[in-house]
Amino acid sequence: MKKGVQVLFIVTALALLIAPVILGGEAKRPEAVASYGDVSITAEELDRAMGNRLMRIRTDEYNVRRSVLDELIAGHLVQAEAKRRGVTAAELLKAEVGAKVVTPAAAEVESFYEAAKERYGSLGKDEAIEQIIDGMRRQKSAARLAAFHRQLSEAANVRVMLEPPRLQLAAAGPTRGKGGAPVTIVEYSDFECPFCGRAAATIRKVESEYAGEVKVVYRDFPLPGHRGAPRAAEAAHCAGDQGKYWEMNDRLFSKGGAISESDIRRFASELQLDPQQFTACLDSGKHAATWKAAQAEGMAVGVQSTPTFFINGRMIAGAAPYELFAKVIDEELERAKGGRVAANAEGRTR
Image 1: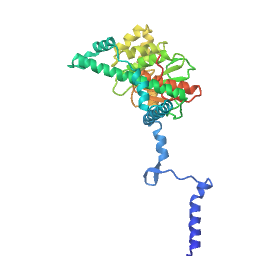
Image 2 (image 1 turned 135 degrees about the horizontal axis):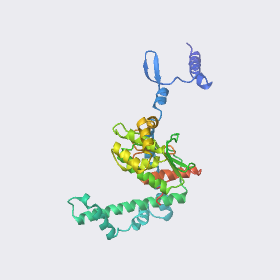
Image 3 (image 1 turned 90 degrees about the vertical axis):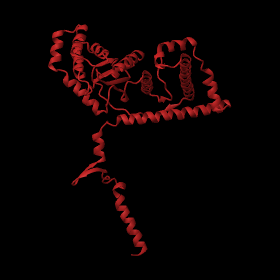
C-alpha cells in the first residue's frame, strides 16, 4: 500500500470512530462494573442504586476542603497585612494575637481547678494549676487568632464559592418554629440514644438564638439495638394526636437512655393526656408505619447513626457542638440573602 493511501485509510478509520461524538450520534456505552452471561451492570446503574448513601463521605470531604481553604485564605490575608504594615507575618501575629491574650485571673483558675480537680488524679495542685493556665491561654489564643482572621476577611470582603453537598429533603414530620423560616433543620433521632438527648439541648439553644430564622423537623430513626425506641416513637406521635407531641418528645429524651413502658405511662400522666385515647392509640400500633417510613427515608439519604441533622440539606452527623450549628446556619442565612459565604465564619456567639 502506498504511503498516501495508507494515511488516507487511517484518517478515514479515525473519522468513522469519532463521528458519533462529532455528529451527536450514539453516546459511548456506559462502563460496565460487573457482568453475568451477556448482561452487564453499568457504573450509571450502580450510581443510581447508591443514591445518597455516600452523602456522609462527600460531607467529610467538603469539611476537609473547607478547613484547608480557610487556612489558605487566612495565610494569604496575614501575609498581605504584614506586607502592608512593613513587618513579618510572625511579628504581626505576635502583636495582634500574642500581645492581646492576657493571663487568666487567679480566681478564674482556682474556680476551674475546684470544679475539675478529680480529673488531675495524683497530680499536685501547683502542677495542675500550671496546666490549667496553659490550657486557658491556648484557648484564648485560638479565639483571638480566629477573631483576627475574621477581621481581615471582612475588611478584604472575602467570599467563598466552594459549595457544600446538600440534599433536597421533604421536610415532613412534627415541626417546631416559623413556617417560612429561611433555615430548616431536619433531625433523624432515636429516643433511647444518649447522644440524641445531648443534641436535643443544643437544638433548643439553636431555636432560642435563631428565633424566627429556623424551624426544626423531627424524623424517627430508632436504632436496632434500642428495643424501646420504636415504642417511644409511637408514644410521641400518640401524644401528638392530643396536641402534645413536643412535650412528650422532651420527656422521652429526659431519660437519657432506655425507656420502659412505665416511663411512657408516667409521662402521659404528667402531660394530662386522655388515658383511654392514649392507650388505644399506643396499643393499636397506629403510628408504627410513621416511624418505619421515616427510618426508611433516613437510610435512603445516608443516615447511618443518630443523631444526624440536615441543615437546608447539609449533613451534620453526631451530637455536634452549638458552634458548628451556628456556623452552618449563619452561612445559610447569608446564602438566603443572595450573598456568598464569608470566609472564616465562626458562628453566632450571642
